[in-house]
Length: 115
Image (cartoon, rainbow, N blue to C red; front, side):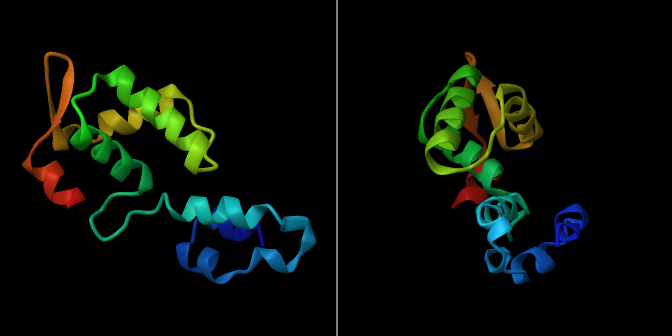
């Protein structure tokens, strides 16, 4: 069963019902969250999408984006990421935004991805 996670095979993870075994009663929630980390049709996963949505919503500095992500994960996800992981994810998306006066602004490519 856990080999599905190690293989990182999205299809097998989607098809397997971890709720069948009481030992895995919380694992299904984690697997469902993990599935959100696979890229969607626009090439973004849930975290990438959230980052671009935050940038699109307001002019924020890097520390404010990271803070918003940490609050979001606590309220709406089961992720346990830290600031460094979110900083890496933000930096990975640099082709979709620009920075002016330390504030992040979506460029046209970024806007196309979240609309």
